[in-house]
Length: 231
Picture (cartoon, rainbow, N blue to C red):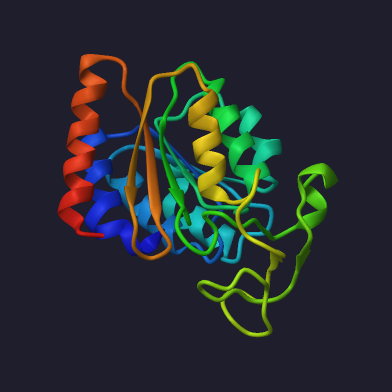
């Protein structure tokens, strides 16, 4: 996600001026620190969700104070506690079950937020990845292994991309991958939403409400930002 900060994410935040930002999936906190810098300087708040953050949470809380709140846990357990959000970043567990149900939970909010999703291109557009396989119900969990991925090769390989995590044994097919989850959600929802996509660096997708005149204006501006980035 951090790859898109300067050219897409930060310009959109400056334009949309969100008060409450949700980040699902912090990892080492690189994108978290960017979001906190924005939040602190714009009187906003960041709520981060991660079962195992890989940075000094106490230190970050000391630096950013009331601008930062961390909720340790799986997104599907924590998101029901969220009452409102202007912008949400979904960059946690990259599999159909998690992403689809994250979007379904956001759909229940009074107003659907602007949503950024990472990894909507290869390798996880059409292939599930599991950080914690046991957290996915067996009926939604594809055969998987701690092996890597190579472009244009369906089977997992020794070496290759992301061999340290659990990857689905094959790509494509129903309920498999982040982009598939996005497409399935958009096909089913009764909300009027619009999808924007940047295709480089494993892909960034943005979902936005698109019903009112103001929402359509916001979408046009976001599309301009994405197009101007060349990503």
